[in-house]
Image (tube, rainbow over all chains, first blue to last red; front, side, top):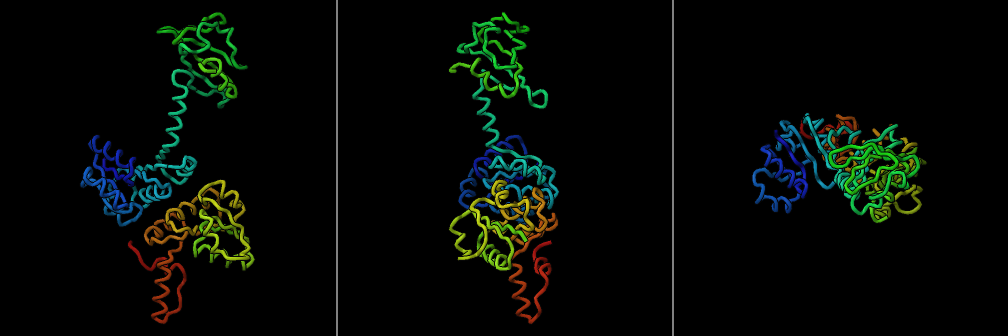
Length: 220
Length: 148
């Protein structure tokens, strides 16, 4: 595949290197001369100096034959314009934009960009998962999101370990429905005693899901 | 008419004053507070300090009731994005972007975004003046030059 990357910051540089490593033909366009000179020793002929928003540069870069254009500068406006021009002017099949302000993700899609990548959004999701690591992970939403299916792994410090299901002060409307212990699944009953490393599956109304932390996680 | 002008540079400020003195309701959105000084005194415009790409700023500016939206910041891409937000997301009927790059302006006109390219306009008018011609309609200047 021929892939044009616009924007030689950290994201663009590493993206280019990864794509090259995968065996793709890649061109990285950077408009700042200083940044260009810093990248040149490492990227050589894969690098082009110019403003990727200009049609002249796009023509030279071969947008017309690109399979994919990835706009990853630090400016949302520039990324949008590069992608729109790639699609509308040059007929590029796939245009991917980095969006720095996560609130613009929906807008980019409305304006016809197929792939929108929000670093903030990804980091946010990772942080969310990290916070819940080893403990509470939402699996699915039922009833249009009003009920959540939640998975939680009980760590040794969980206040629920060593207690019976009926003795847990679960939030209203919530219930542990399933316990996976080692290789085996058990239907959770009132007198099922929870052990360290148990994976429990819980149904909870969405408004009370956060309260599960108090019951299941350490430090509450 | 209810007009929102994003970008209080020389162009935006001059337009704001013209429309305001014509009796139109003008709201100016500008990122840099000091640029609002260009409006001078007694300009009669409503001013909002903020980014005209942000929904909350646009809503505060009354985009839902706006008859026209003008994007006149110094960034072509900012103007093209803002114009599309006004047009596509908020359905403003008259939208115009200032776009300095003739090629980009042409490509977006094809996509339905109306723009004015100041340098083409200036050059074309200077040419007409030099050749002793009357000034042409705007489209003639917009199409006067550039590739394709």
